[in-house]
Amino acid sequence: MHRPRTARLIAAGILLACLGAGWFGWRYHAEIVPRRYNPFTALHVADEPSFATRFKLMRAGTDAGYCRSALSTSELKAASLPDTMTADGCGLRNAVRIRGGSVAVSAPFTASCPLALSYALFERHVARPAARMHLGADLRSITHVGSHVCRNIAGTSRRSDHATADALDLVAFTTAGGTRVEILKDWQGNDREARFLREVRDGACRLFRGVLGPDYDAAHADHFHLAATGFSVCR
Ligand SMILES: [Zn+2]
View: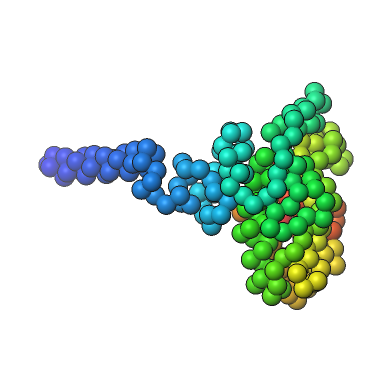
């Protein structure tokens, strides 16, 4: 009568012991799991993103040192900026000035470390491969219209992600062959430029916390708003 119950308890005990051992091994002997799949190890920008990247980016959002050491593995030219937080919810903390990476940027821009880190991953693992796949060429430059400005979200009293340099607005991509793809004129349709932009948007959603584009509203018809903080959204 009691035997099946005892057997179930023993089985449950063995299962719990195995799970516990697995957790301990993963947590304290991180080398047994490849770095790109292990949420407890450092983030290296060259590693192909995986499900663990989301956890590492969350950690980068709360741990300034972790974020900076992850950013140092990227090809971005990034110079540290002094903290200048102001009382009204604007300013910089753990921010850098980005002067481009293996893909040029239309102008240097200021970014919080988490934004810079997501951008580094985006440039390497989303924008460049998408250009090669859909446009048949290397990506030469990314055109943006700014990242850091002290303002509220339009029509609200809430600070924008831009107030703390946690968001970047992209408008166009140019290949080495001279093809320029603009969100405003190329988003609609199903030609290679439109497919490139959709792949870029969808890829960005895996690396940024918030992504807003033409599918979101008319205010984003001409740009992708890529944010490292705020609501988790992908449209
Ligand atoms: Zn924006």
